[in-house]
Image (cartoon, rainbow, N blue to C red; front, side, top):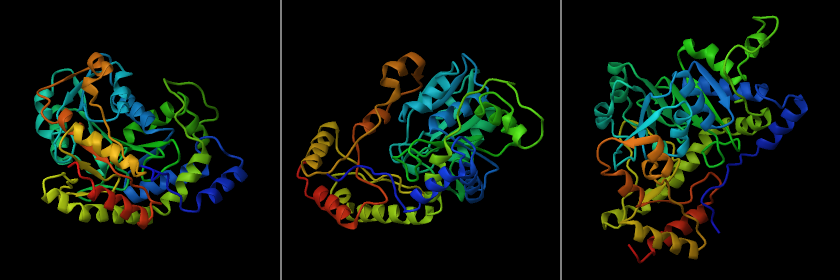
Length: 376
């Protein structure tokens, strides 16, 4: 069976994990945690980067730092993973879903302003498949209405918008290093921001509500409980695994792009025949080949296609069930405007195997098998 995903292995992970164990510092903010954060600050040109236990936790931190209060409204797409909404629901927010662009599956920035009310506090954008939302327009809307912008860049590590790294454009950016992502630490994430105004609160929040970070910098002679917080620090063992991959980030990116481009070239004939729609990447984006998907005619065709691939030992998957149609989505949110594209497009999309260690032979087999499907 060709798996849909497999965590990347570069060869250095075991070496660095052994070093982490030898350091005797396995808890949060050890040497490798700091190395990962410094690597991201340098490569993505961002002032502050805090490794977390997950992208979910990075989003929770962002919601707290945005000062979301019960009754506030937060605008986001319905086509996203549950964590995007959960982080703000936990703060008591009402989620306001808006429709997406069918081309990119990203939030339609043209619909955001009409969804803003006096209760709106933030806009949360999701860079689907590592393809950026239209950030200039979104940032202008936020500026006009004095709103915070949170980038859910879970899929956007090492992807860019007009030369800026995704996750560094809004007030806060949230990365995922889950095993399904381009770079992984098993479970993990990161919170990024530029404004120093948020640094002290972010450190306290991440350190269980204590001023422990200031203590370790020698700024105070003892640390204590000073504010709300939780335990968002990952183990340094996890960070050691991630650091080996960050050192090979360009190599991993090049391999994923080669797979993506092979798929894209060979499926052009299917798109020309009207059988599928291939991914679309706007000119202002530099994506990271996080995934390769095809859009089929309808739900019935997709189901038959996935079954066909499974019969040929290929695992393909789909996502997401739109949040606004779920029980929790109905309870904690509402859809503003008309659902023209979200549900329709979600029922057509299927993701093909895409990971760093996928061999050329496997890529060719997947491609040939797709091309031989008779049910388009």
